[in-house]
View 1 (cartoon, helix red, strand yellow):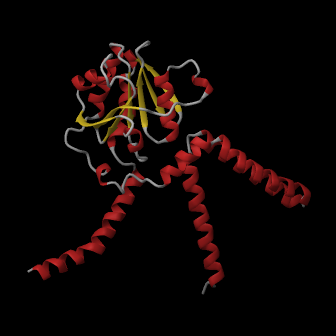
View 2: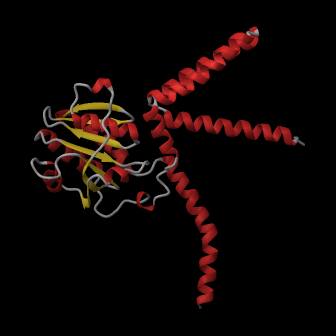
View 3: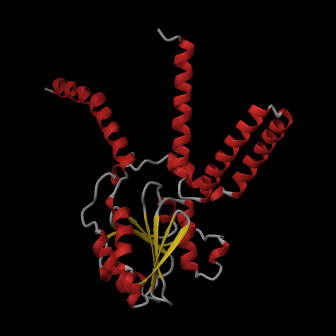
Length: 284
């Protein structure tokens, strides 16, 4: 029979493994995730090196350096850490409105056609497709619509000098949730020559896990911002890659979200179904 100490050790190792895996999974694809991987490999090499060679002084110096490094990492990678922590609190399964497509929801193909048409006509536009992290805080800065997306509606929203053409639009569950919204602007020095619309697209993608699409009114290009990275496509060749991006954004929940929602639904049926049955019996 395994002792209580061995079972406790196994559970602690399992919890530590799951925690590290979850952090690396959430931080993957960002500068913070790459930094974590590099520092983790470096720490493992130094730990093995100092342990076998019995370098006590070097090990103590490394411990102090790691403490200072942790503090500096919080300051340097503040946007990435904030987005990662926000993603832990949202699985896309706790909001019933995200678990199903609503009536009039647009699909990736029609949305791509609208974006390509805007790019060909050089009409500037900015869309944020909500995924796991809620964008309701940014919606409050604009005008709420909750409208079915169509070519006519998008043209009337983003054609200047109409009142709603400035700012960004939020798309939730395939519908235009709000327009004329203010998005955070990125301070990335690589975007110094980019316009305010593209900097806002990258800024929102740094703060949240949303897929942000910017249409340039000067170049007629379509840019995709995701996880703090910007991908530019010419209007003539943008249809296929943009359709793939939007296919993921408009598809719905991730695999993890579907698993969590299935578990919650099962638990809900297990806990509340007997209550509902007993309530019907009492009413009868």
